[in-house]
Amino acid sequence: MKNKIHKYDFLIVGAGLIGAITALALIQKKFKVLVIDKKNNISKDNRTLAVNANSIDFLKKLGVWNALKFNPQPIDKIVIKDDISKQPLIFSNQQESMGNVIFNKDMYEIARNKLINLGILKNVINYEIDDVLPDRIVYIEKEKYLFKKIIISIGKNIIFNKKYKGLKFNQQHYSYVGFVRHANDHKNTAYEFFTQDGPLAVLPSPADNKKKSTFIYSSKEKINSTQLQKLINKKIADSHGKLTINRLISKFPITPHLIGKNEKYIYVGDSLKSIHPVAGQGWNLGVKDIQTLCKLLDQYSIEDKKFNSIFYSRRMIESSIYLSFTSILNFLYENQISLNKDIIKLGYNILKNFKFLRDIFIKQAMGRFNLTD
Image 1 (tube, rainbow, N blue to C red):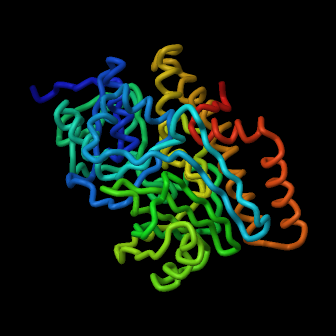
Image 2: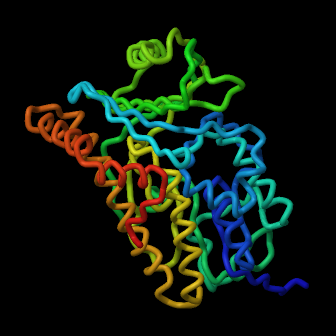
Image 3: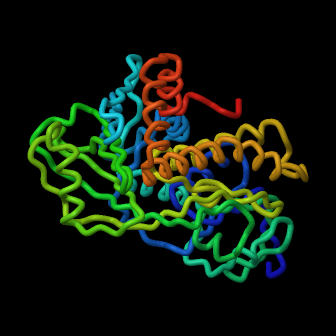
């Protein structure tokens, strides 16, 4: 039927981790969903992902978590160190792990294969964002489609090229991600080191033993593999023992941003915002985007004209706080004048001496502390 119009509740643009999981969540809620993506290959992403307790609960409900091929690596303790305060801050939770580390590729394959099995993923689609609009005919593979809502879950660079309104920090950082093998047991401990050049996170990685970790280092300055190995060795040799860095290191730019309100689209994940990795919560915030969307669908009709605005206002609060906090933290460490050092020391002392604030930090790290509830 040449003139047939395929009608759907949602079109999701982008089948990355957040886009795919958004689709699975909406399918579970009985909505009719189609996902389009320009890629048809399995991800070659060799990085890992720190998934907090809230995200794990959500992924279990979607049937994704228990399907992982590689056993997740628990994080039982988080240690924060810097060169100013000298004394480390240690956080742990006695009831459950504070999160788990998994391979990006592992979850990506599971989520994407579920979309393929459901028959809702169309690959290698040549499209422009402006060509897909809600309640207007959209041509996909020469067929007509009509969507009530359109969700954007694609790379931020495409968003920036469209010059959409929002908050964007012009100071770009580079992140370096890879793996390191070490002689000592990592003891299920994650480390965060704050330096003047940039933060370094070292997390336990899934492995047959506990002698492999993953790292992410971000800085304004470019750094080579030799410099990176010296830095990591300096920070973790005492705790991890003799180490060897895998030469396969991923490098990518980070431009913190928050997209402004847009009546046409619903942004989720990295399309909506990206934050500096010092918080380690970027992907988990993307899961909260999906959870917020699902909650709103229990309260409002998707045909409500204010639906997009309500979603944006709900997510703007938490995203803005994270974006501001991480940016201020980076500024203080990168500009270590006397005043900034005093502010950093004060912050450490407050966390060290006030248990209720440490408890909030732990809940936040686990995704149990909801700023918008």
